[in-house]
Image 1 (cartoon, helix red, strand yellow):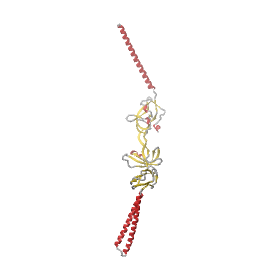
Image 2 (image 1 turned 90 degrees about the vertical axis):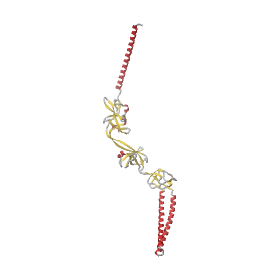
Image 3 (image 1 turned 90 degrees about the horizontal axis):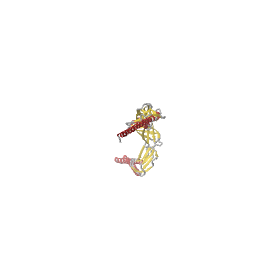
Image 4 (image 1 turned 120 degrees about the vertical axis):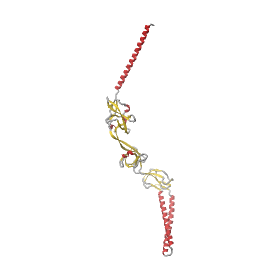
Length: 384
């Protein structure tokens, strides 16, 4: 091989490499230009996102519902018991029975008292006979003393005998009266009209004095008791009408009493309300006291769906601004109150701002949007 042919081969290789390099660079530039053009076309051709909006209406203060939970109770309820111990001989009522004041509910075995009463009556008859004899003796001795046939000392003795016999009669009569009282206590009487709510013993049971035998609940209109936080007591006044909810029943009630003291453990104040009707209600039912509480913050009601998570525990919303068309702007707000469907917020919102009401998780600041047909003019119109 000659030197000339070798130099020709090297020149051909160099030309080939140069051609390949030029081709690769040209292809790369061509692809980059095509991609850039496609991306620009995509951004330019992407249609604005349709959003539902409403106008922000600022207001000074707001009303929020208050729910306080309590229990239905009877104005009168008592565990009734005997005032003396003994064996229960009979119980005349059962749970659910209606009784009247003074009605006999139960009775203790009183055989011992009856026997003792018979004994005392017999003793009373004997002492009365002794008293009669003493009085006759006193009369005879008095006559004899007047006739100087008996000494004054004898008269004093018979008078003392008469006084002793009289005192003994009174003592026995008092014992009989005491037994009569004990006999009365063997009968358990209803202290007020109502319904038997519980029965704790049966016949044959031996009970001590003061042991509850039955539980009695008054049939008078029921009442409800609520433990109200101290800062909310001023919302209620004695005599005013309030609304209650008991097992989906809406009931009107009247505030009857505000406790003058605060519970030391819970720091709450008890409120009693009288119910207008007992229909379908029982003591122990859970009741909800409904009311309104005023908030002093200045802000706006917005749909809860307009909120999305923000920074540092705050929330953000989107408003539509007219900058190079309709674009989104993020605003930070603080939720003062929410009922799950709407929220009262304060923050970087102005009266008349067009607020995006939903789908905020799909949106971002600066995004191009258009208004949907469902947009409304005010927050009030959308949330009421």
